[in-house]
Image 1 (cartoon, rainbow, N blue to C red):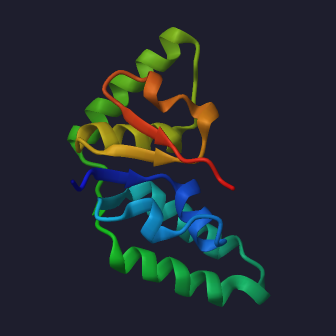
Image 2 (cartoon, rainbow, N blue to C red):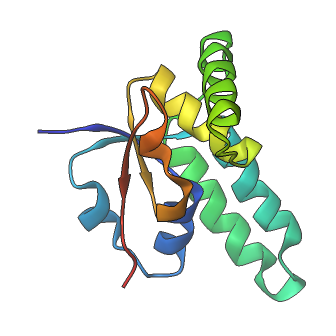
Length: 135
């Protein structure tokens, strides 16, 4: 049965680098990315040196054209605010971008697929996360 998932940036980078097989990771899952993940990928293109920029841009544009992008809506902002306050109260801060991805996953009822076990996304109320280990 297909799951609704949202792909963390690390998953997409691992796929680009050949460390994860997209078919093995997703199978028949209904995958999307958060708008902030699109920004992170585009920033990677901007940061790439001249030798790698074109190849990275082609790869990123392929991702952006093939996966739905969940917007940062007011509904996501409400979840983000709740998660940010929860993280502050627990003394377990995360990056703003990570919190936006987690909030997007929770607000859209998607499972967050990540390579970052240290982020502790599943410790945030309402966030379902699955850590994929890289070989």
